[in-house]
Amino acid sequence: GAAPSAAAPDQPRRPVDAPATGAVRVTQIEWLAAALVLINVALVALRSVWNYPFALVAVSLYAVVFYDARLYSDMVLQGFFFALNLYGWASWMRAREDSGIPVGWMTDRARRQWVIITIVAWIGWSFAMDRYTDAVAPWIDGAIAMLSITAQWLLARRRVESWYLWIVVDLIAIPLFASRGLYATSAVYVVLLGLSIDGLIQWRRAAAKVAL
Image 1 (cartoon, rainbow, N blue to C red):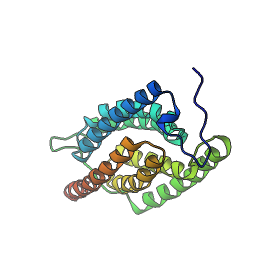
Image 2 (cartoon, rainbow, N blue to C red):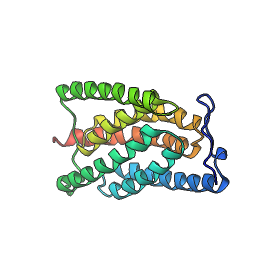
Image 3 (cartoon, rainbow, N blue to C red):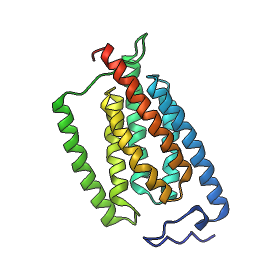
Image 4 (cartoon, helix red, strand yellow):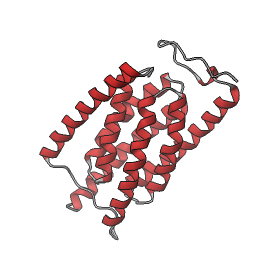
C-alpha cells in the first residue's frame, strides 16, 4: 500500500498514522527492545560482562523503532552503540577479575576534553539534522545522541562518570519519546533513570575499592 504521509512539524506522528499491521509490528519490536535494555542496564550496574549480548540485540531493534518515529539521530546512534558495545565487550572481557569488572574515575583533564568534544559534536550533528533532514526535534534528539555516545564510550572504558551522563540522557529522553508516541520507550527511560542512579551508587562504591 501507499506509505504513510509525513506528519506536520507541529503534529507528531503516532503509530495510528501508519497501517495497523505496521504499527503493531513496530510496537512489538519497541516493547521487546525495551525489555532487553532493562536487562542490559541492570547487568551493567552489577558490572557483569554479559550485559553486552542483550545490548547488541536491543540497539538493532531500536534502529527500526526510531526510523519509524523519524528520530534519525537516535536511529544512527544505534549503529554507534553497536560498534561501541562490541568494543566494550572485548574491553570488559580483558579486564574481568574474580571480584567483577574494575571501575574508576576520569582525570580532570580528560573530563574537560570530553565536555568540549561532546558540545562540539552536538552542535555539528544537530545543525546537520536540522538543515538536511525532516527530523522533528533535531537539537534535543542530537543532545541525546551525542551525550549517549560519550556515555557509552566512558562505560566501555569503565569510568564512573558515564552514569552521570546516562542520568542526564534519561531526563531528556523521557519527555521527548513520550511526545513522539513512543510510550513504551519513555516508560523504560523512567526505569532506566532509577537504574542509572543505582548504577552510579554501585560504581562509586566499587571505584573506592580499586584503582584502574
